[in-house]
Picture 1 (spheres, rainbow, N blue to C red):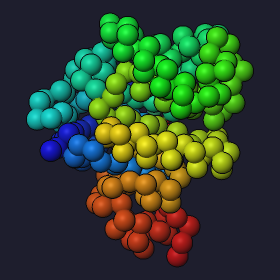
Picture 2 (picture 1 turned 90 degrees about the vertical axis):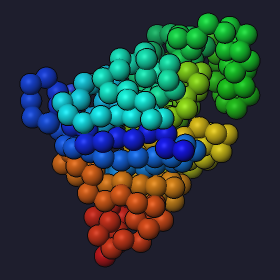
Picture 3 (picture 1 turned 45 degrees about the vertical axis):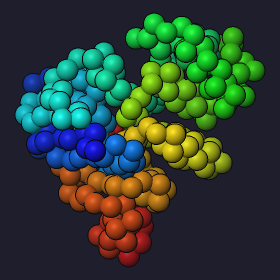
Length: 238
Ligand code: ATP
């Protein structure tokens, strides 16, 4: 079933020119879609527009065949679209526990929230041990795990991850990609924006390349990984 269908979507900041230019992409439920491209290509802008944080200037977004164009962020989140933003946006002065709970702020089912928090602590023992500590003491890798834990508490159907591996050590990057695979295998669709092109293409089912606000290539990730143009531009292979 088609989960997300993006049709001719354009967006801009304030009164500037469009930085997202007629992007069309679709993904099926259960897939991992990777979006790659250089800095400034418009990848984060696409995620912010899908989340409802930026109003499109043209085009539409369809979520399970319902038009969700221009829906506010909290409605998008209630529908299951959840973003782990670039830079994680963890609140350093709050405890690990309170940061996690922020992910559940639209939910009222306290029992289920606490059961899911326990499952997150089981998965990340480093967070469990220090749950009442301020998040400021965590390493980059632990902050990324906390940001993903917070997003899971919002019960995503589509988890959007913006540059999750940025600034992490190679060991943590491996763990992060394993975690993304596990979350996907447990049934959550994933939209992954990543500069680590090789790993992203190895993980994803489908992929798209963005350049200057446009999608310039799209298709099965395994096919894109062997495309000479992509290899030369993003994988350092000639
Ligand atoms: P990066 O990996 O650097 O975040 P990206 O592909 O995600 O790159 P965007 O962050 O979406 O790219 O940026 C697309 C364009 O929009 C860039 O030209 C950028 O300068 C511009 N832009 C991004 N955020 C804003 C903003 N808040 N206000 C105005 N312009 C912005």
